[in-house]
Length: 236
Length: 236
DNA sequence: CAGGTAGTTTGCGATAGCGCAAAACGGGCC
DNA sequence: GGCCCGTTTTGCGCTATCGCAAACTACCTG
Image (cartoon, rainbow over all chains, first blue to last red; front, side, top):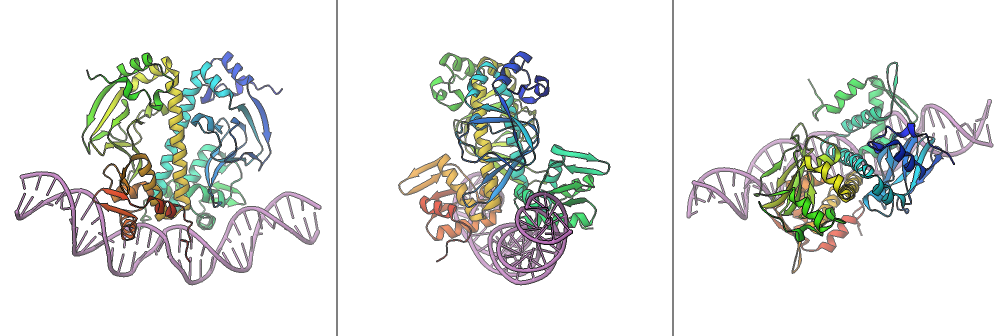
């Protein structure tokens, strides 16, 4: 059985206030698994049999409508939990999770959660904290969708991705996993066409450099300005 | 000191799995207060000194942008908690809460939360559950804003309000607190003008009856159909 | 009961962004 | 090394919805 080194995860928010011995006990209930790029981890609507902690890689959580339209709920970065359906008392996953890069995860059976929470109440408190933070972020996203134009929303989305999963380059920040125009469209409530037009525009101004599922912010500061600019466009 | 009758709140989700004695102890830490219609309970950005449980009335939670635009985060119904900034580790309220009707609330000092959670871990688990549910609802709202037209979103919003706070009438359902076109616009990401046009249209078809801050769904079933109709409008 | 205020209705452009279509592109696979 | 497929780019008309402006109305206040 693959043993997980305690020290690798001890610092994560999920385990704040948990003693090393307790952590050891918690990890004994988990197994680890590897998901190759573009493989599904779980499907929306499936029985929530497990919950997950991402160790390496990147995972996209997306929600699909009955008519097949999708939105990206979020990108999961290493160290974050996902698939916490049980925390909200849901029997089925409300979204689909897919590895966008080769990824390694820890997996607990959902059935272990009540016992773990009883023995280690800090887990519930810590999870409450992260779910609460996600709720706030979600509200911020709604606020943006209600009040900002597409260009500003795309700017915000890229800045968030850069902050969460950006790789510093000599000159600029690269988003460290494959992401298409379509993905960005699904994060911002627009179409891939509009995202493409916006990025083309920015590229010709030298703000970004981008290609197939690849985006580099060359002038992050100028993109911040774009993101904050009010609707009038700042004409002189 | 105003004593709160235990039996009034014992059945609430927040207190699931809490013994009567424990509940008594928890309630001893709270005080109750009355907020008249249209009075602010707390302001976005203010120190989160308390958290709340609504006993009677209705409360609107709204978020404001730096430029003054608002969205309605949610309407709080009796029995629900709000102002849980501390649960997510926030020092300040992320939104403004206002009583839209004369309202009565229980108030705990934020500082009591860690102690309560330690003594009664079920509180954390229960709160996790409700916050998780809200997160899901929030994602659903994002999905709707991304994929549906305004008319459908308004239909969904009214149906949710009717479900949460609807008063059954002989013929139809009335939303049981004052709500303006502007409020609905801020729930659905549109303008009060557009909401007014939509409601006017529905009214002339007999689907709703409405007036100053008052809405009655006369044909809830037909509104469900509108809400679910895909974009083409179902011509033929 | 008159006046004032907040909420609502409606008309009329203006336009951001969509939707469709098609071409160009880039990379990996055989 | 050439072919195939998924991604990206770009053009062009369309329309749902906004934004502004103005009139109207119901309720509350004095």
